[in-house]
Length: 395
Image 1 (tube, rainbow, N blue to C red):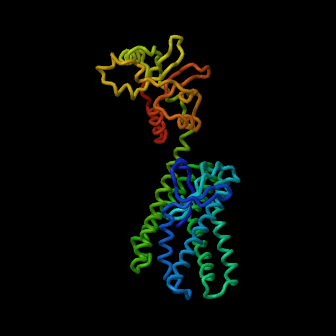
Image 2: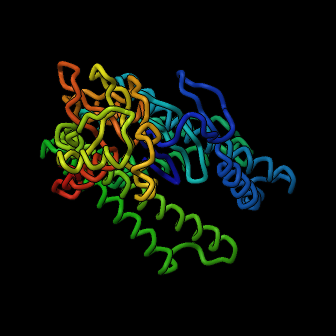
């Protein structure tokens, strides 16, 4: 969902990363103005001041104030459009992180995707309906305000801008709202969210290409600075649409492959050794046992530490017979133990909760059954995304 514009995306930046100037919370949703929005506001103020003087009898200085008021009005309109998406999302049980207004409009950061086509449709149309309502409010106010006044000019801009926002957003391609509607429709017909996403992604790419064609063929205004600025914004918009459409395709492919990701498919067989032996001896025993990982256990056979393969590789081979295994081992913590039954989203969440290079995999009886090397998991998942499954080292 992006217009010149609005957008919706999944969470992509951690909470600690600043996103701009806080603008309060609405319906419990924090709102921010990014630095690029102020560039947009300055552009609107400077470029629209002459237009204000053309239609309203005001001084040069007042025309800039009116143009800046229009920039604020447009920002509020985009914000309300985004809040329309957010409110419906929360009603449907989706988590909304924040709204950010930026150069090309606004982004609603919704942390999880709708699970049903109907929900996707409802979230998508909520924003354009808000824009339509704002245009209707402008139409209702039009006969009330005096002709030739600043208020009349602002009301007209409120109507026109919101109609344009609504119309552009309803184009059938991701990340626009119309793309979400198209995805919901194809999803409903095919019972495949991936098929719906593919259709909407290609819709978005076609829209981006069409904008580029308009730029190349010179359909945009030709008068000097206005043409240059319009072309630059059009190029940014086309790039934004293409990038976000492609990103939506990647996310959909990942969601489709994620349920196939099973810990049992990537676990390496292990060998248990006492922690006091040398790295060289541990490696020899692992090679002789055809094991892909080494687990250090105490004298009672209880798991004590997990050996890092990457750390072993940093030790020169001639030093390994004289270097203690404990130097390349990591003490086991609760987060480093994974149940063999983990799969899909639960497996990914467990990894994200405790980032590491190796994990000890235990069975239902809590006994060690193998070791997960994070690089193996990534390689296997890339294989699933490519339509196959990559071989796991040490198995």
